[in-house]
Length: 545
Image (tube, rainbow, N blue to C red):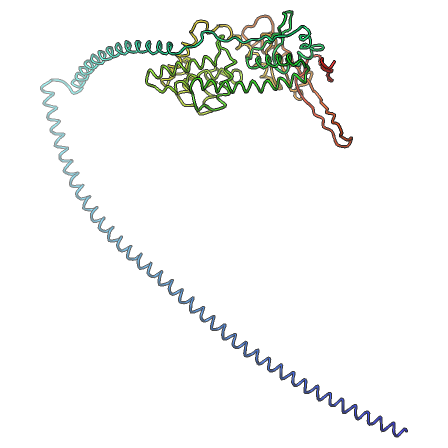
């Protein structure tokens, strides 16, 4: 058994060796096959690389040849351009040489002509000297004496003829101008028909009962004070039955106050908040009426193309009077008269009507600017590019500036005709308004003043200051300074003028339904004009009581 096992083991070992050798031989064959395949692939890649390299070399050579050909073409073109420029330079050189030869010939010819001219000039001077010597010998006068004698005789003759012509022309012109002017003015007056009376501003408001007067005044006068503060007007409530008077020198503010008070009385709800609302509504309505009045005036005077802002300012003249005469109606009348006279003279009637309509526009600006109404109106109209004729008519219709256009004398004549009609003007109102405007201007000239109103026919100036800039102690000094300045600058005023300075800080809070505690506040502070003896918390209105 041991022998058999040994034999079996030996056989197994032999078999294993044979198998290993066979596998070894198979692996060598496989490795040789792989090596041959790798060599074949390497040879193929080398052949492909050689082909690709040859291809790229050919492409590079082709591109080089193309670029070389293109460069040659560009060089040929540059060479051709240089040849052309050279030819042009040669031609220009030939032309310049020709011109130079021609110029030399001309200069030589001019030199000969100058020489001949100098010889002729010398000959002429010699002849003139001989003639002058002969004339002096015959007349026995020096040249200065002869010249003076001739000039004197000519001057005397010209003066006689000019005097006769001027006298004849002036006489004829005066006769014709006087007759023509009389005809034109009379014709214009006859053709234009206007009312000889002017409307007077109504400053009274009807009150149904004495109880309503009490409601106008309000508890401790709070309603009347709120109304006066909102409008700047003075409300006079006296024993006169059925009426309440409104006093204010500014016609626009007075109309706003009158309409607002009338609306409040008819509505019946009179308290400070309602007063402010009504005054704001009436102010918008009056501004709209002013705009409509300006447009209607331009349409009535047949004047087109006027700027809207100019028409708005023109409409303010509806509430302005000059010596008692309504200025807007006066301007329309002047426009018609100017147009009629311009048509008679053969001028532009439309331009003349425009000059007449806008000649007093400076009166609508009033205390808003310094200077006379002619200067203020001129500056205002110039900002809106009005024609030069209109500007000269505005500033020169009172003779302050020389007339540079023929329409200015027409406006001056029409203005005088309109103002000279019976009952058209009064003499005192202009000085009165000027004094009140001067009082307001003095008050507003101080720092921190927001508004100033001259009330009580100029016997009181109510000054409203900015609460953030003026303190309580400073208000007393401000009132004293304004009073001193009025004493120094206002020439004369009856009695005494009371200066009242008003200052207030008003806090307002709104309670909104449904708002939670954490949603924030909406508190506003209103720095507005104060009322004397007015409480911080206003009592309920009279009708609520």
